[in-house]
Image (cartoon, rainbow, N blue to C red; front, side, top):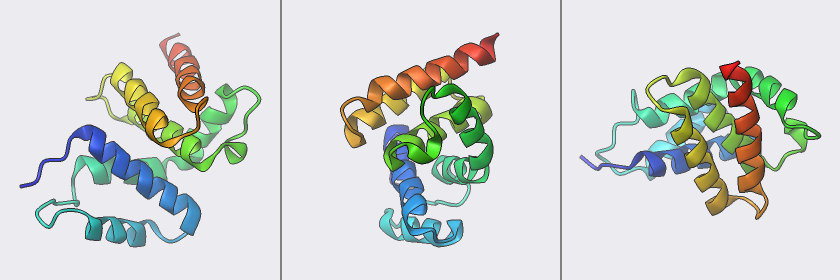
Length: 138
């Protein structure tokens, strides 16, 4: 079986969430397109990859509400599509994936921003997620 690192799975999740943001097709259709891109022996159903894509998509309204509260001066709809999907993905992990340390979710989000977003995005993403985590810990 092909082994994808969790970092690579997060990259694929980000690409799929971005695609959902752009094409406005159903989650199922986008997962189907993703499945076609994966190695034949990768089982998408029930995987970490499916969990983070589906969870981020299903909780998007709640995630966006939190992001709007803590991204001072930025409304989610005004953010770049990559930035907002990195934030959504990381926040989903922070709130709903108890098996992933918060620091790992933040570090992974910053790394995704370094690879896929504009120059100022890594520090912006780190700052927003840091504020949210600070509030959660209170």
